[in-house]
Amino acid sequence: MFRKTVYVLVSLHFTLITLVILRILDFDKLYRVAEKPLSFVTAINYSAWRFAFFTPDVGKSTEVEIVMENGQGKKIHYSTLQGFAFFTHNRESANRFYGYKVHTARDSMFIDLSSRSACTYLLNEHLGMNKIRFSMRGIQYPDMIDFQKGAKVAQSTFYDTSFGL
Amino acid sequence: MTLFQHLGTRFRHFFEAPISPLPLGIFRISIAGFTLLQAGLWYPDWALFFGREGWVQWEISKAFNKAWNIHLADLYPLFESWGMTDIQFIYLFFWVYFISALGLLLGWYTRVWAVLCWLCHYVLMSSLPTFVYGVDIFLHISLFYLLFMPSDKVMSLDVYFGKTSPLPTWSTTLAIRVLQIHLCLVYFSAGYEKMLYHNWWEGDVLWRAVVQPDFNQYNFEWLAQYPWIAVGASVFTMVIETFYFVGMWIPKLRVIWLASIIALHLGIGLFIGLNFFALIMILLSVSAFGYDAWQDILALRPKQTSSELLVQNLISV
Image 1: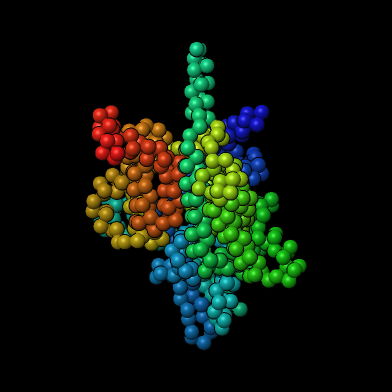
Image 2 (image 1 turned 90 degrees about the vertical axis):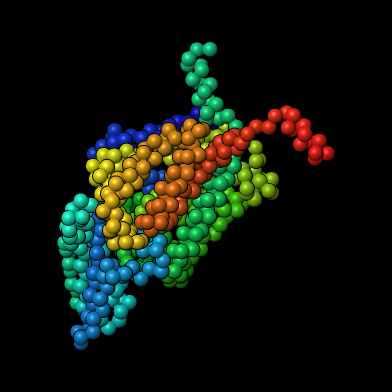
């Protein structure tokens, strides 16, 4: 009986994985219908997860630029294009901000909340600064053929906000 | 014997015939070791990621969480009543996570530590959903499997102290097969999805990945002059990933396939800088198929004839 139960659970586990990754079940529709159980399963063991969801995005990049001022001419400037790694101590921690940027760029409400959160963090780290500007720019490299022909890297600001104390 | 009976026998043999539990021991030690290494590197940035006033404050990360997921903010009130600050609490949590991974590595009360380690990882994943990427997902899957798999049957203190029998059972084989099948599905999915995008066939996704500022480790802009290299590397990636489920089950191909998948992930680590993602994927493939590949290599050695064995025995006498 125990062995049969194990086989049933393993079969259900792999059936769910297969249906989701092969897109036999439309993940988005499925998620709308059964969001709670699927989110729960995902949190437990990621069996309802499209592993290659990242595939089309791997070439996309985002610049985060932060400028702080104290109102008396002192400025602090951070840009991820100039090596700013969010005060992390190693490459592994810095890599996590790639996912952070992708997540925030996708959700207009989240981008607003997370940028405020980041600004609060930065103003706490830099006492004396009272104005902050937080910008995010999408960076898109051309394809190889166009790059050979001299096409430039496209940059477009998709989020920009300022706060003052 | 009917076809049905024959298939039933083959099925039972594949999933239940006792095989060495060594791959499960390698899996447990690899994953626990990986968890310790990752946690060690995370330590200097722990408050930055998990602190109440970190990059994403608790109120915000909690607002974007599902109601039933356990966030650090849900646990803190239990400790706050004992006078603990939020910073003390997150570092206490770190040490519980670290020690549980150490217990799992040593294989002492393995299941207990496996449950605690998975639970801690679950809370961590729920507490920073925006910073999660592939490495965390595969670590979480691995820790989930370690809850159930008899990974304590080899290279563990449980065996040393006689708490667990080292003898393989049907569950040992089933556990190894589950890990192998899961990896086949994951790689098939990763390869097949890439094949759906024309940018992958043209090598442009790979080119952008190595030149874009988030990932670039070296200046790869010269690659645009030789697009065939990017196309070749893309096709190699798609073939190796999609047909992983074929290559890993054919003894003559398995060693080549395993070496190719290791080379692929070394490339990801070296050229895109996703070192930990590369490492966990290598560890998973080695855990699942490394033992079989090693047996394949041993089988390639020329077999000694009985007269050669006799001569060897005489010399040794």
